Image 1 (cartoon, rainbow, N blue to C red):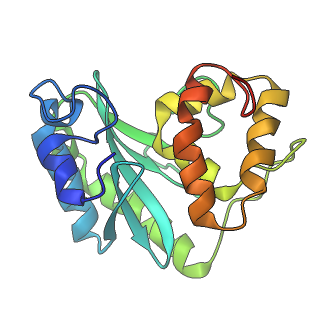
Image 2 (image 1 turned 90 degrees about the vertical axis):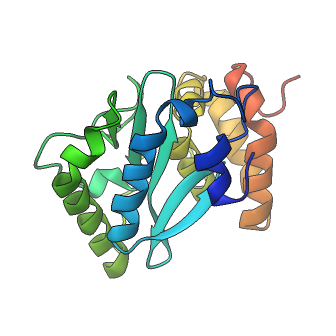
Image 3 (image 1 turned 180 degrees about the vertical axis):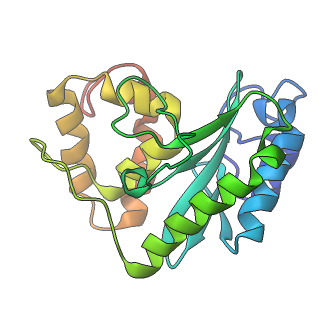
Length: 206
């Protein structure tokens, strides 16, 4: 995966064989992605690269991340359960996603036409970050590490595969990642375990 933010907009995320080719999803939606980037930067967000994608932060919190798929490109919000969504533009990434969390576009001109709405949603999310407000944790049999939750928010394909796992397999990832002492180690493990999630396996399956 890429580690320099400029590489995403010039070559792609580096997660598949289409990297650095005209067929890369980031290249197909280049002008629309550039508009999303401008809107996020104009909002005053700090631009970083996480999970091979442009991630935008404020007050030490992840606010939103840009992604490109074959059929669309999108801006996905972290902690989306907090957003009021007055315009009704947020969509779920998949049938197993708990809360609507993304604005997707199938036309590169889309972000420019929705700039006012996008900026308003970003400001709302930034306000929650400044105030230290987080969504109420939903009850479950086990708690997923924050780094895994954020990685799933940033990776629709992985999120859909993870939510399709049996509770026992999901729990195995919580245990393996929870045993790591640092956030950096948990993030590194998530990267290594991604292929297992996509294959429908538990963390300790071969």
